[in-house]
Length: 169
Image (cartoon, rainbow, N blue to C red; front, side):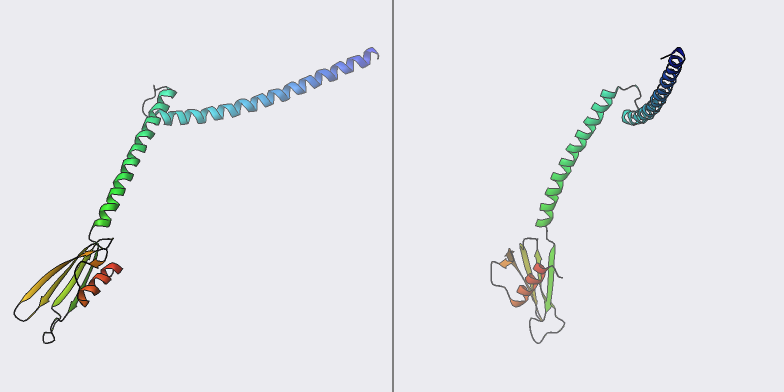
């Protein structure tokens, strides 16, 4: 190979090196821009994490947020227990009521007698019956456990209990 060919080879090699160096510089520039964008995003997130105290370190901010999350978890646990107690209380409350009005005696009008059932979700409660006559009224109360009375019920009392168990009024 002569001196002329050697000079062309050196020029091509120098040109190749320059192109490769330019490409590497361009890739480096792109990587720098990407890193700067990511850093700006991380700074925004860190500023949000810090809250009002801009002098707080990253570890202190993370520790504070972790403590806040733990406190929220305890509050959620407390609320779950409170909700469970409220559900039990509601199930034991009188929520199912039914009233059956009727004429206890054939000669009376206006259906002045009634039987009313007051039950909770498990069918526990009472049946209150008032029998209205011309000169007097008598009131009776009978206990109901799981939808069944401890004493014999009249047909109207049975109707009131069954209606209350169905949830109708």
